[in-house]
Image (tube, rainbow, N blue to C red; front, side, top):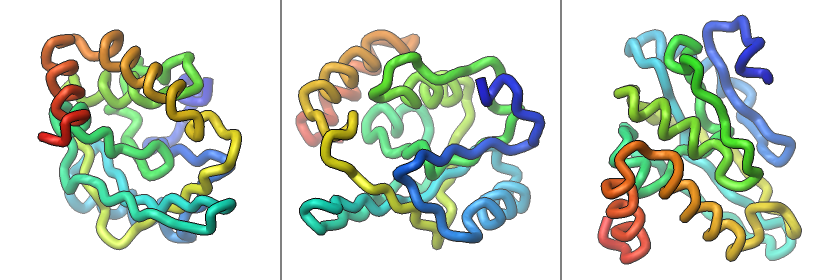
Length: 167
């Protein structure tokens, strides 16, 4: 709904369990405008409040469709995209892996996302959250690889390489 009614030139996503640095959007938009990029992303730090541990999730410098299908390292709350790159693409209706469909659709159109240096978004992994259920996440991941990419064989080959650690 928000994507359909957006009037800004840029779109960014932030969930209730994400924390952005104060200057994230200004840095990202400046980076995109200086370089002529339509999409950008950042690294993420995942925090587990219960176990009191954190994990840094480093993303690819430039993410195209093949890279995304092999590594799935576009984290929704780190992305900023120019509205012209969105087209009519939307999120999936599923609660898990809901951005997967959007990223695949955009990247299949030839758009690349570029990492903005010096930005790290924080994500609080809560006990009981949708992403804390590994079997359900696995099922939705398999579903996403089978349903959303146009080239199913290529997508499944990337998934298999990813699962085998060969990517």
